[in-house]
Length: 114
Image (cartoon, rainbow, N blue to C red; front, side):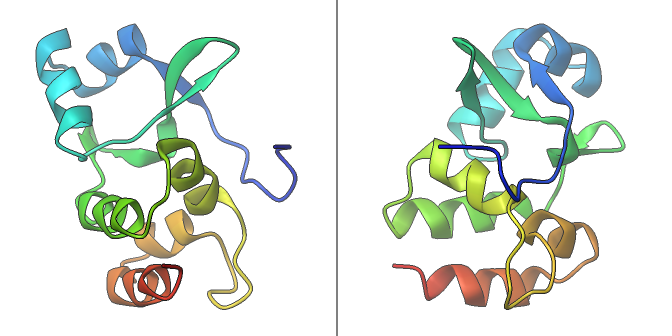
């Protein structure tokens, strides 16, 4: 998979996440396990797009969207790629729409992907 059409983003490693969220490693792992955050391996290292963190917290609307996509059969890599890639229906990337407060629109689109 290439990175074409994917919004450029900063990729945060686990130590970066501990710092960005100001949480211990165990809590950061729990946020990932409980789908508040999703990440992917890049060059062998687990990373999370920095755009998923807003004001030191996971973007609130992210969790439900991650769960909808996983229920549709998406792998974590596919979830990250979909969130960051421009979408014709939305006119921007799903993460940009979530950041703009358009949770319902993004989830409605995600439900059609099953």
